Image 1 (cartoon, each protein chain N blue to C red):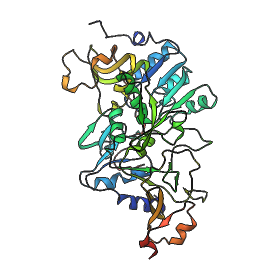
Image 2 (image 1 turned 90 degrees about the vertical axis):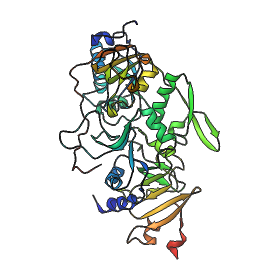
Image 3 (image 1 turned 60 degrees about the vertical axis):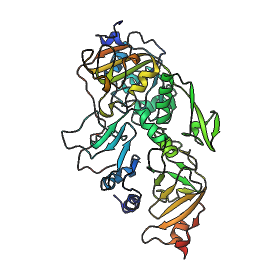
Image 4 (image 1 turned 30 degrees about the vertical axis):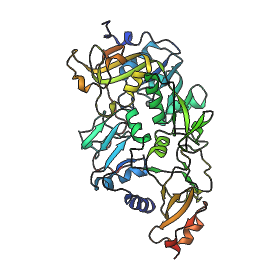
Length: 215
Length: 235
């Protein structure tokens, strides 16, 4: 894993707390599963119908009937349960999931998220992302601060089609942590070794700086 | 009890005509009705509208119906695993309606439960909301989604009996119970047919009232899309 991603994951791991029911999105958020296993009574939810995802199976133990939402073979932890897709999304849409951690392509200064569609590329679909961002009690987005072409992914307005409008509670990048409070964006933490100026230079979105940072 | 039990795969799908709307269970390749899909390919019916979370892969699952040009429209939440899909979509041969996964599940459930439409926050402010009624409840915006009924459902269970009672295994349940509810005629295939009375009534997932035909499949391939084993790095 490259250093930027590793920094994001280390910081995101601190969002996990004992007793939570958590949904981890496909891709980078899946890397948090090991951290979740170190917590007490955390249950990981997989939207295809499982509460209580366990580790990947030992060779020979894999089953076609037991997969996660990324279609990977998994196991279950003691106390896990299976259910159909309507019950699964009742958990998600009904506010029973404490925390959803998703990857992002763009986040706007008002907490809009775009993470499902790149114009000009083939549409693959939103899967369960639109349900998660509107239904989970807390939505944390993790993504790199700037794109591969060097553009800020923290936008005044998203240029890509939205996954959800004003849905992000916290954004964690390789440079900083932002909270969205009452429709505005606040810089609340710097990643280790990062200076305020670097965040200012690489952020298109308008935000305020938490008093503790500028003191 | 008029017999629901069918013994020939061909007979199980014989009443499905060209142009039918099918709800098909499964998530990825997990819990898909692979026998019925193969029988449909054999039957050669065309212009099908298929409601299914995904569309299989190029050479397995619903992908084989795509490859044989039997599908006119897909209603799905994610279709990214299939190259033939991409070609037919870009050429305009195949129509696609993308539906958020929870909305897809609920639209099927609603169709089965006699609920014509419902409000949900999912999709507000996104392309999914285009052309849909928005209403405010308790200070939050919701959009109106319609039920999604089907002519036929193809579902797959682990065990079942001649009355159509079904039990699924692990995460292979997924959309199967909802597809079964949403259709006028549900065709269920099971890995193991057991005698009526052998299934514990406490453990039945889909009561037989939602199933009109049942067949015991044989030699299931049950392909795994992504085998990931302990020690592999995630993601």
